[in-house]
Every structure is written in C-alpha cells, then in structure tokens.
Image (cartoon, rainbow, N blue to C red; front, side):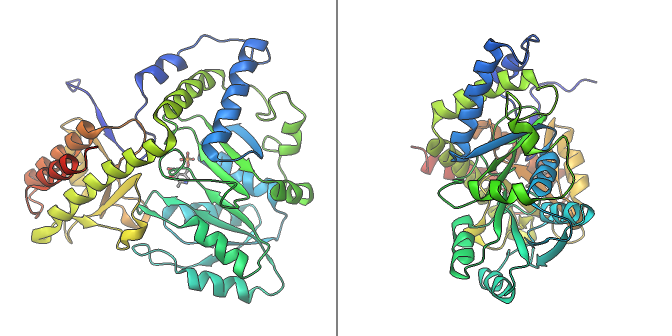
Length: 391
Ligand code: PLP
C-alpha cells in the first residue's frame, strides 16, 4: 500500500527539495545558448560563487560529487604526483581510492574515525616532506559517514607554518550552504561541491571553485581529461559543461539561491546548528541505559549537517531503519565499516523543528519496537532544548 502522510526524509543527502525549487525545476526546455537562459546561468554562476565565498574561478559538470572529485584531481595533477589525504571516513577513502585509480600516489594521514585527525601529526607529515613531493592536501570538510567536521582555517595554518606549498583541496559536498565555508578567506585552492545537499536541488550537477594558484598548477597538469578539462571549458560560453547544460537544474538553482540569500548564510548556519544540537541532545539522552550514542567523540568537531549514531553492541541498525521506514521516515544507513552498526540523521537543507522532531519521534518508537536499550524521553529533551534556544 502507498504509505500515507508526508515522507520524512532524514538522509544526509540527497536532501529535501523545497516545493518552490521543485516547481522551478519543472521548467520547459529552452536554448541553453540563448540570451534568456544565459541570464539565468550568469546569475547562478555569480550566486554560487557568493555561497562558496570566492571571487576566483568556478567550473561545473553534469554528474554527482564524484564527477567533481575526478575533475579536480585530473585538472590539477600529473601521473605519479603525490597527494596527502587526511583520513576522515568513507568519503576520504573514496576520494583516495579514486586518486590511486587515476595514477596518483596517495599518502594517508591516518585518523581514528571517532576523534578525527591530529593537527600536530599533519604538521609532522608535511615537515617530513622536505622535497615537497606532496602536490596537494585533500580534506573532506564534513565527513558525511562519521558526522565530523575538520577545522579548515587551522589546517591552512598548518600548511602556512610548515611553509608547505601543496595545493589545498577541500570536499565541501556536505558542508556547503550548511556550515560555514569561506574559500578565499581560508586560502583554499579547490572547493568541490554538489547540487543535492545544502543547495537543496536534485542530484545532477557538481562543481569546483578554483583559486588562481590552482589555475597555474592546472596549466602544468598532465593527467588525461576531456569532459572535465577546465581549459576546454574556458573556451565555451558557459565556462563550464562540455556538452549540453542541465538547463532545468539552473532554474532550480536560481530559486534555491534566492531562498539561501533571503534567509542569509549566517542565519542558515545558525538554523542548522540549532537543529543539529536538538538531535544531539536527544541522542545523548537515549545513550543513558546503554542506548545508541553519538559516534563522534570530539564535541568541537560535531557536524551540524549530519549526526552518526552508533547502535549498542549486538543491535542491528538496519533492523531499526527498516522499522522506522514503516512509519514513512527514511534514516541514513551506516557506511563502510559502520554498515549495520550505525545509522545517520541528516539535518541539512530544507528542514525545520517539526521535521526534526518527527524523525526523532519515529526513531524513538522504532527503538522501543525493536527492543533496543535506551533511556526513553530523548524527544522530550530535544523539545526542551528547542524551546530554550528559540530566538
Ligand atoms: N563527499 C562527501 C562528503 C559526500 O557526502 C558524498 C556523498 O554523499 C560524496 C563525496 C560523493 O558524492 P556523490 O554521491 O554526489 O557522487
């Protein structure tokens, strides 16, 4: 039977799409080289640069975040170049694997997934690279599998104090337009993003913000590319997209940028923080009585876009997710080594208090029905927090 009532989608991406964005995406086809569309495109290009916090370059591709990962690596590196990847979780591993497959030598800074990387160890690794063989440092700003963020200005500081010239490449896929990110101010050379998370759009395009320093490296980069070539893109009217432009998504982007700028980025970050904190208050409460607990053990690194919740030993997260799905609520699965052991609640994008409470409520019902130990009343704790923190 078709489930009744609204579907509560609490996966950390793709995210909920506002109705007005959905209507905008339903635009009829137009000439993507024509003046009317070019006006929409140019406004979106400029708006996306404002969200990234850059006045430098921006290249876009039809494809999900993986496309932007690949574009970024192939446009900046040559076969045999070395990169340093800070281990954060499933997505840092994925980006590293892609680099290896592309013929790049990957060095990893290992880290405990529950606590994150040690900045002192990063400095040591960079200092040890006296010949500057490391051409790029790759960082996932917000690790969507573990619910942990890294301090990007601090990492910039480590590159500066060790006087290491590596390019600074950042995956902002689950941080952009959700938690603070400022490409130029933070000295980032390439910022990788996608349409389907903080930008509240369907999956379909991804992009890289690129610094002048990175453009100079691009001129010397020899990894093969065609669809992703920034040089080829610069010869085109849109300075992006080799081939057909995903027209409908730009009508959607125009509307999502309007919503983002109407709310204001600082207010949007504050909303994400408050909703995230409500989820954390609830989970901390459940954790009493040996219940599910916050996976991230470093409070200063808590992610405001996704919370990963570790099940008590011997209880299966997939059984809980399946139970909660019967109430038409979609929780995120545990990824990679957390499969079956953890579940995730996304709190980014088009979201409000009622939606978060609905998700937490259904999850608490699921915990009861599945016989998972927990301290009941997590949702009441979240309600109390939301009442106290209301502006
Ligand atoms: N990086 C991060 C941090 C992600 O969360 C994701 C997807 O969730 C990706 C990369 C991969 O992006 P995509 O699934 O859009 O290819």
